[in-house]
Every structure is written in structure tokens, then in C-alpha cells.
Image (cartoon, rainbow, N blue to C red; front, side):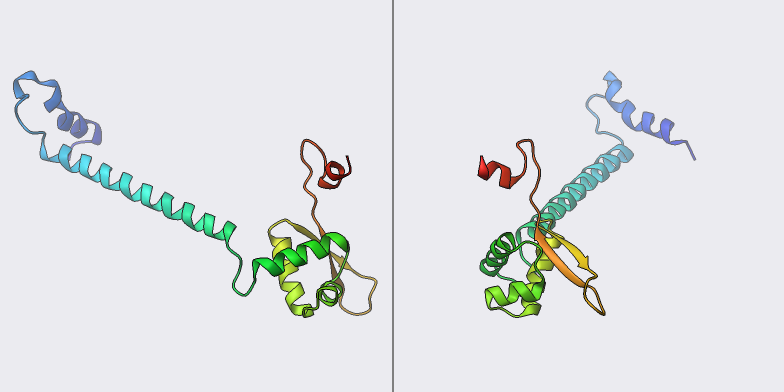
Amino acid sequence: MPDDRSSWAAACSWRAAPERASTTPPFEATLLLRDHTELHDVVRRVEAADAIIAFRQRASLPKGLSAETLERVSAALAQHPDASAAELGEVLSISRVSARRYLEHLASTGRALRSLDYSTKGRPGTRYRANEPVGILGTVSQIVRD
């Protein structure tokens, strides 16, 4: 069995020989080109599918969450820093469990920070606060104040 380099050179040599210019390429080169083209098409399709999945994960909310309630929870969290799910649920007139689901979504997307509160007896409670991204110009609250 010939090594890969010699078979590749033989498969491509039909182009270099002027006396064979009218002949078709060897069968092996045709198969190699077809396989390369098919592989390239598969890679493009997989990359496109990955981009669609990533976009859907960024743009969509988990099942059961609504954009309107998410904005209400986010606004309430900005007004009540270091609040628990029960406290925000009471402020918004929604259940503690619903408030916790929205707060956990905000925390998983980086829009809120969670911390454990060990001051209570028994299991520690979870407190949430809005995450203010720091950029070149400073925090969001600094930009609004100035």
C-alpha cells in the first residue's frame, strides 16, 4: 500500500502533465475532493446549528417565565438591594417560589448576585442584589448620578 504523500501526488499529477490536459482526474482525486466538499458542508451546518442554539439560549426565557414579570422582579431587586425571594415576592404580590425562580434566572444570567445569609437559625437564607456591570465609564449608578 503506498503512503499518503505518494498517492496524493499521483492523484494530483494529472493537472501538471500537459499531455493529459484533456483527460479527467483520477478516480481517487475525485473521491477526495467530494469527501472534502461534503465534510465542509457538514461543518458549516453544525456551526449554523450551534449558532442557532446559542442564540435561542441567550434570547429565550426558561419555560414558565415571562418577560414582563422578569422586568418587574429586576426593577424591584434594584429598588430593594439584599432582598430575599420571600421579601421580593411580598413586594410584587407573587409567591416566594415564583420570585425565587425569577431571581435564580437573573443570577444565572449575571444580572443578579446571590449570597448566603447565615444570620438565621437552621438553613441559611439566600439574599439577592442587582449586579451592576462595571465598564469603562464606571458603574451604572455612577453614570445615572452624573
